[in-house]
Length: 131
Ligand code: HEC
Ligand code: HEC
Ligand code: HEC
Image 1: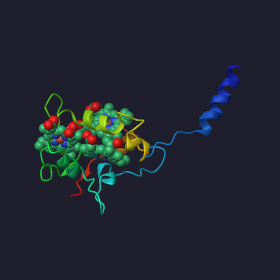
Image 2: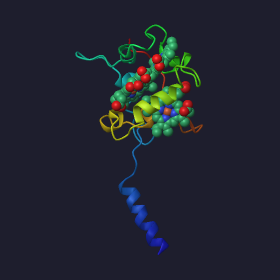
Image 3: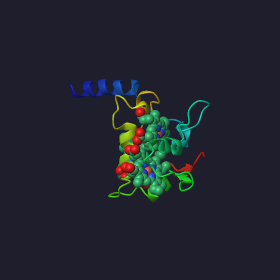
Image 4: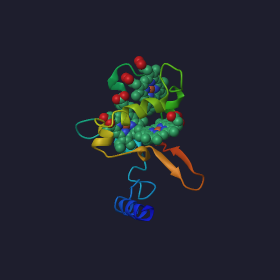
């Protein structure tokens, strides 16, 4: 009984092996924020433009040079700016049935994080800004 159960689950997992880009396959978003937040002919999706359009966010164009690391100059826990990871986790994956990050781009944790399989550490991807 137990043996056949193991066999069956073994088959299920083999057929549906979970693909985690950056761990089991090539990372298609090595530049994270900057891979997705770009400017095209019609719309400027760059992060500084998105935040400037809000009207209540300080202009980060000169303050932020490495993204998202430099955001943490202001976004610390218990400040009015708020914790950066809370902000970004919420806006990208906080509403999974509607977030286009998940529904359209099919991205997950590894869109912004890296995994170092030598140390076991999860880190954040950080890159120069695209403005
Ligand atoms: C795979 C593509 C992708 C990546 C990677 C990504 N974003 Fe986004 N981002 C989106 C999408 C799509 C939205 C719109 C929200 C939604 O519906 O998912 C968004 C929304 C935002 C917003 C607006 C948030 C709000 O409050 O509405 C900011 C700011 C932002 N992203 C910054 C970043 C930063 C900084 C990074 C890197 C740490 C990053 N994004 C990585 C796709 C991406
Ligand atoms: C100079 C300081 C500063 C820097 C740098 C900064 N922020 Fe902010 N951010 C704030 C403040 C202050 C608020 C709160 C604004 C408010 O609630 O009126 C905020 C709010 C936000 C919000 C919520 C916006 C909303 O309208 O709900 C997001 C998302 C955000 N920041 C993302 C980022 C990202 C991503 C970066 C880096 C690319 C960044 N911020 C860099 C000061 C900063
Ligand atoms: C849109 C980009 C983005 C996505 C997607 C994302 N993270 Fe993060 N995560 C961040 C940022 C930015 C930080 C804060 C880095 C810093 O403060 O230096 C962070 C920090 C963290 C931390 C450290 C603790 C904390 O909250 O500050 C953990 C744990 C974490 N993320 C786990 C996850 C997991 C699990 C997922 C998927 C379910 C995920 N993240 C998806 C951007 C992201």
